[in-house]
Length: 392
Picture 1 (spheres, rainbow, N blue to C red):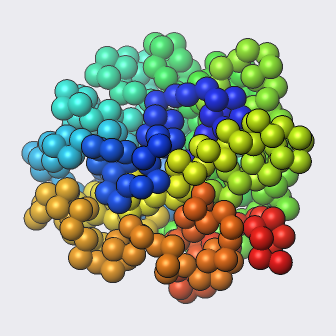
Picture 2 (picture 1 turned 180 degrees about the vertical axis):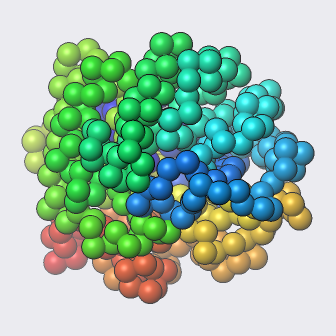
């Protein structure tokens, strides 16, 4: 994740304490000194929507073999022993699990901060209160545009209206809530509308995701935005973030799954003559070290298998039913996990030659593999020019 808010305005939220510590870029097995990784747990594959870009390829049906409540608690206890700072409950749709509240509360009591990634359609007022009462730190609701655009992507008519109700219920009970918006060719024109929306609805946070070619998202590879469109999107995000800041509206703005965004902000500040701001961004990006899938970020799927992140489930490193998560993570047997922990010598193409490699760490490997067939090739979503990255 790239915190636009942190880079531009030096304002910190919970995640920034993990991303931008001085030791972050030196870690091999966790987010920071003395910590394990942030873990996303796709707690079920079942989903009540049919999203076009779903990396899980979820359907509205029951899947056999998912972790039981007891197995999930053992897994969470292992994360607590490893000092994992946060557990993101994702899916499918995690609120479909009847034991969600029990497990999220168990994580909170164990000192692992529970967060929730949801489509929002099941969040009634009572559900929102329960989420807040058990100590869920943040609820991220997936929304890919306003009504017509969103429902087209979600594959279910009325999904937008129900998600809106879920967001409103979170706001009403004081639960921290934000949007998760995946940018693509069909919704890039919605960016300004999304900023208007989060202001109007008093939403705390928005994460703008770059498309990753995984699961059903593979079929959308040709529907990704171009490099020029990425730059234009970043200009909108920066402009509107600055507008919020100038008007005293405290909103956490992030971009996700493309570390070129941080370098772009740095270069933009230099071009604007803001050398002080650019120096701050440079220090923060160096501290962070770029993409840390397989290091500071991990994913466990519904069946207990451990992966580098939620988009790289075709590489499996072990199963929490058979081994402790910490042992799987810190004693890597798979060459991909071993490589991710020290990837710079393995990278190829533009990534290998880029002068900002230590800030980006090769960006997103799954996209590179989907496009080229080589896990260590250049990420095709890097929109920085050869001249900007110093290879001309």
